[in-house]
Amino acid sequence: MRILVLGGGWFLGPAVVAGALARGWEVTTFTRGRSGSTMPGATAVHGDRERPDDLARLAEYGPWDAVIDTSASALSSRDVLAGARALEPVANRYVYVSTVAVYEGWPTEPLSTDSAVWAAPANAGPELGQPPEATSGINPFYGRRKAGTERAVTETFGLARTSLLRPGVLLGPGEYVGRLPWWLHRAKRGGRILAPGDPSRSIQPVDVRDAAVFALDQALRVSHQVHNLAAPIGRETMGRLLQACLDVTGSTGRLVWLQDEVLLRHGLRQWTELPLWWSHPGTSAIDSSSAVTAGFASRPLTETVADTWAWLSQGNMPVPHRRWAKHGIDPDKEHAVLASVG
Image (tube, rainbow, N blue to C red):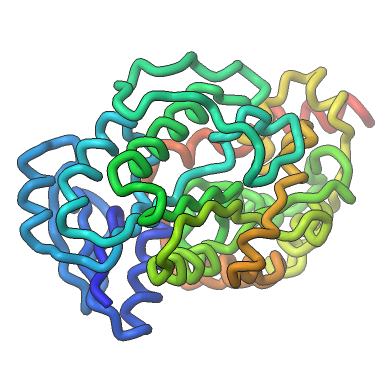
């Protein structure tokens, strides 16, 4: 099995590469080579997905049985379309890692693979959509753009040769966004810890390693597949997540739970200022049954928390990324919010 991994240097990409090499597959990676590292055993090709000459040079390394695309989050549908067209003659299948944000109802409604997806053209530029709202965490721009990139892939490769994977949140060792690492470091610091919303609220993060395994399995498929990647509804909660962070760090910190209304009244940014906190009901109602039927297995969140802390404790650092700075509440602000409620 010969595969091409678009984005083999960050988080999901390396997990896919490691899994493929463990299966004895031949792996080519395509990255800009500015961060991350090349995994021994893989053929590394460096270039920019926004440069036609680089894409043409990449295609010369083919053919491949499948492309697994893990790195299109910042690209326009026009760029993804150009890449798909360059690779279509030399690849049999395209596995595209997208997002649940492509659904019109995200994050306010329960979602399944039958839910309506944003209408977006396959050749739109970066101007598509509108900027996100200030504090709600809802970014319609991102969802529309990602829907357009999905369409770019399916229009080029055809439905029978594509798999679309729509994760909600990926966590685990190597995370560069800063969600779980922030909570772990905050737990370790101890004291009174501002805990958001209801501790029994369902959350549905997926371990990056489980997503990688499933993406590789999809590379072997011979039919169109669309799957949401999320933990089973109700299995994991915000309370279990934060307690696990306290447990693995050996913290004596105390969780102080404040309801959504209080947090919103203080103007806290959802999703980022207290990572993974969202008051919208759709964030905990993602149906992943089609993926489970197709073989997807999501490990317990406690295992992901423990392994991420072990990874950090060994001195590992994620790839530097601007999104890291957006996550976490300022200590003075946290203190002020807690002080306002006694």
